[in-house]
Image 1: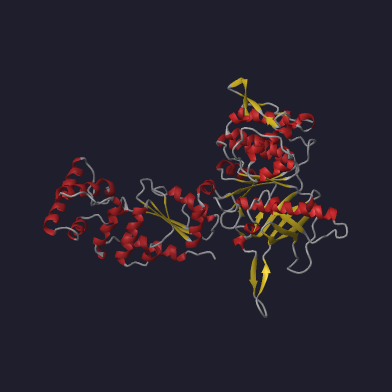
Image 2 (image 1 turned 90 degrees about the horizontal axis):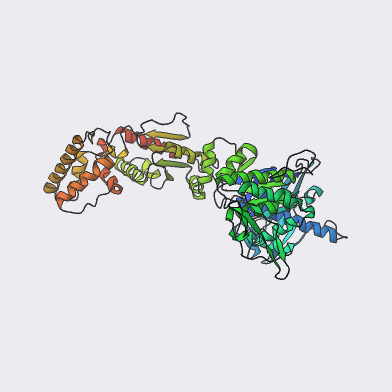
Length: 590
């Protein structure tokens, strides 16, 4: 049996490429899913923010696999009814979907609902429906649908799905019965000692997410495989390649009933270290390798296999697990937050984005991939609620725009009251990355991005759905910074004759100082007035007044209240018009 150091080779005479696989998953009424369809492939990577449904999709596949196992048991034991309508699954058997009570599996906890019709309203059961499509090893396409009904807090029913809500149920294809679905949650904390466990106990702990508590057991089982080929020729070289460490054969102490596992570090090759001395990334990689080697010819579901791994090793481990999946004729479904794995998968495998409706990514640009790894679920929620997004430098810009719209009684006042706004500094590329990430979920999304004057101008690749604009003057504060506005502000809150003269003196003092250091006038639109003029003016004014300076940048928007509407620059009105137009053109998805 030919193998190369580090991992399996790809010789055609070793194993044929995976032929059979699952191709599509449809889930209804399960946890957060009402009705979603997810495309599958030999290797598929689920990406998206937290709580977007990646793990839920993995759990749905696992529940479908459990239903099939129960069906196999019934078909093998029920001779008189070889096509029994189904059986019961105990809550404790839901290893990969652990819940305190079974109604937590239902969307909105709704296991029953009212059914309207002729006569009196009736109550009907709500069933979780999981339909999986696939291709057999002979290339034959098949469909297998299972329905799960609520029995009580401790158990659920599993039956083949009814055809078109009639009495007839779907047949269970033999090709579906051949599928074996296994699920590995993220890595947990390693225990200091580990007793030898039976396979059933190992599966229970894995299902509960206590993966590290059985790491030594998994390694021991790999080592116990006939001939030690998997251990000596696959797992050990892999750990040596990635970490430069030699994993020693696991030992079983029959007196204590414990398994011990040691390794030799590259920096201390003459000393044997206990597995508990290794880093979390080392343990995570060992867990993935052992688990996959013990589950050949399976649909392997991995939740965050990149956890605890730094960037370079994320790429290496992705390469390793995809190669072993191919060589073991296993299908691989991965949920991840890793930008590295996302980019690796984009060029080689299928990437499904769990934002909005789960969908296969089209690989539009690297900006989209980066945005998907950084955008939180709350952003998609707000974008869906509003249908458009406003990009500004910071919160003070929003306050100033709101003040201008109120002063003008402009239609934009309403849309600026509670907009979906994202602050990106003066960085157009940050706005674009964020916008295209959101567009993956909401293709109809509109956007408006407003920036201070850019020395290099905006990038040339403009898109109609994201309008971008830069102020002609240095920044938005230049559009209300004038002697008249400052003097009116003083008159509105202080002793008029004295305070007005003190403000005039403060303005002249700072103007003179700016001229001394060869800076431009605060009135010509080229000076950064929010940093270089207004702060020293207010400092000088309050000092002359003998009071503490209470005017900060966050309060500058109050100055807009002292500019007359006919004094407002037409450019400001044009910007407000554009914002109102974008908001009006937005479509809010139903």
